[in-house]
Image (cartoon, rainbow, N blue to C red; front, side, top):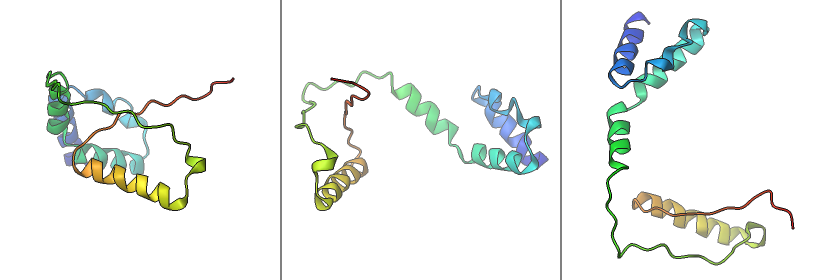
Length: 108
């Protein structure tokens, strides 16, 4: 485990994330192993690139957001729900995004 811990520590220091090990010594051995395994599975370089690319202004005036009509899930049939779920899955696979605005907790 020491070798894995050292590797984690080195990775976290490289990416300025050493605080993830702040309470490491307080964890049980099982939880330490879980944390180390989770950290080793993270692609920090990819996360860094995604973060840096989030600041790139790639506005395209041909891109547009199209509103959908108001839909209440409770009024949909099982088949309609499955259709909308599949549309979402297919959109994710194509790298498309959607904007959803939800309101909750409002009283009339």
